[in-house]
Image 1: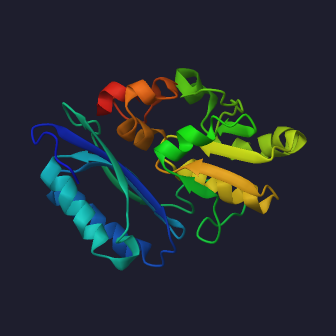
Image 2: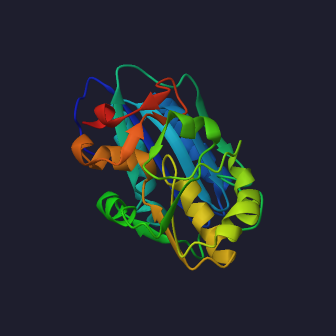
Image 3: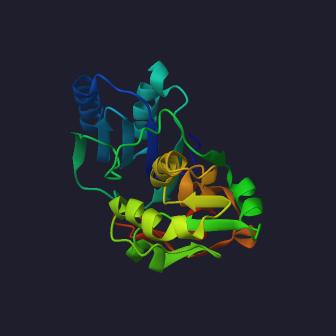
Length: 242
């Protein structure tokens, strides 16, 4: 993990879809790691994987990431990071849930997902007029900012996307679909659902908007306005990362 400023709080998000059969043991270990190293935020565990947003000092966050990556299941765990002047969370939580992100219908991203695109590949793809770009976030988040030409499904929660798919997307029957979300987890799971529903060419932004803002200079960006985040920062933009 790169260190831009030891004096600032590091805000890190990560997730991975992978079969976990030891959630309780992992919960205890991660809770201890957070407590001993003054790491705040939430880590979600489920049989389908892990999802987290946490904050702490550079050294503390590194300890937790190194602990996870020492487990071969998380050896390739990727994360997004930003910096803030103070702790953005006040509580330390490690929860076990049925799903790390709930779509409301059976789908298994560990078996099949859409094609990952890095930030530069994403820029190239969404220039294609044949590509239908879909924002998988809720309506409030979309109103704060979005990609050029993106469709707002006008949903209240992620679980509403299957209904949007049935009522709207299947009627449009696009040849190519490009989907995105804040950190990548929602669009990755939704891509699995779309493939299951018979859409063949499905792409999703690897690492989501946060990774895009981290990697793409503002002068080359197709992102417009702000990206809502679930902490005290409320929103981030290109200036947060550059």
